[in-house]
Amino acid sequence: MSTPYILVLYYSRNGSTSEMARQVARGIELGGMEARLRTVPAVSADCEATSPEIPESGALYATLDDLKNCSGLALGSPTRFGNMAAPLKYFLDGTSNLWLTGALVGKPAGVFTSTASLHGGQETTLMSMLLPLLHHGMLIMGLPYSESALLETTGGGTPYGASHHAGADGKRALDRHETDLCRALGQRLAKTALQLDAPRS
Image (tube, rainbow, N blue to C red; front, side):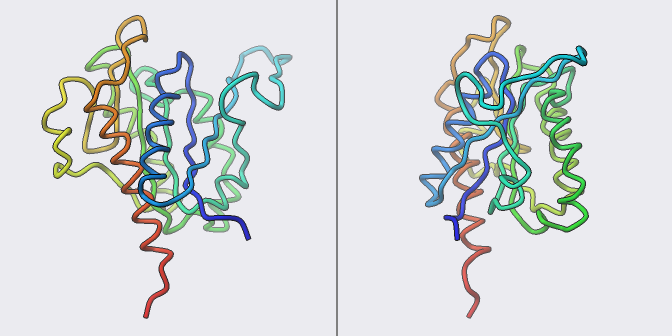
């Protein structure tokens, strides 16, 4: 039997969402669980386009088994007109069998996003990622205001999930508050998953 893990599933184009994923994973590990980083390939309008089975760099591509066997999920995407990016939506659209079997019911899940502008659709993008997770029966983990960074941030950060303001050129690094909130989300997922998996007396 494999070690229980939280799946950190994300799509990243310019590296910001990928860095957020690493910080969420760090929080998961601080919370006492293993983090499994996975990404999804880009989609193309070219019907002949293919990607290598293994990415040239970064995390491996996710499989449905990665999702099926996880103890919890952190889902991340850059914003695309206030919505999740197409590659992540494409992957989620292929999870019907997991929905039919209830494979994700009762597992904790949270979301994170990165945007070029401070008010560039962070919250709507987070909500767009939460919708399919609700359909799967997952338990949604947001960020409570007991996280002081949520009240102090001048960049990203929402109660719906972790967020990051990457700047117009996409090169603004995660600040201290954004990093703290990514880690807090990971810790909440890990601690909740451990509580749900704990034997009841």
